[in-house]
Length: 259
Image (cartoon, rainbow, N blue to C red; front, side, top):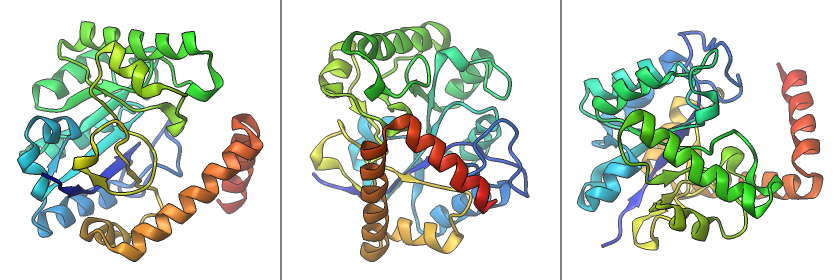
């Protein structure tokens, strides 16, 4: 059975003005935005779910929208509380090396979130771009992060999200060997569940994402998704052409000039 699911990717969730200490401002949404997104999902008749829950019960994907969070910013804790309040769930991809650091969730908070029904998953042991690493280093990032999270949270880790969306060759095979069952990428698109879960596409929710735009994502508007895919293809080509370091420097300059 095939279902088409919108999978959203968040990072930091700030205050009503969007201030979010220690988070990338470009990726941080305001508290008002996030509350509006939850309301829009409810209005559309969609249940906020983790990818992990949708994989466990595929029938629920028919009326589900997946919420995922990358990096483990401290603001994700209150966001999880809002989701749990309405009986929903979400995936939180964390780097064990950053857990407990300034502006990041600690292990105790992550355990509380897991007890409330949240899915705590791997974003690599460090926030390293996998395409910059050797095959041995990639394997260590995938394997060691899974063990650290399972040891500290006490729940199975079955999903992996590569930092920055940078995918190493043979990531699927490496992840499968380590015991994962899915990879949530940064590839833009809708998740067709019949295609499997080794490259679950996601839509990145940014500070500049309007409520109207997000509503179109929830409706799975063809034109809107096509525009997002085109933008993603251009950015991916730029990353490959420039390399990660040069691309990040250029991105930083452009964001600063636009601020």
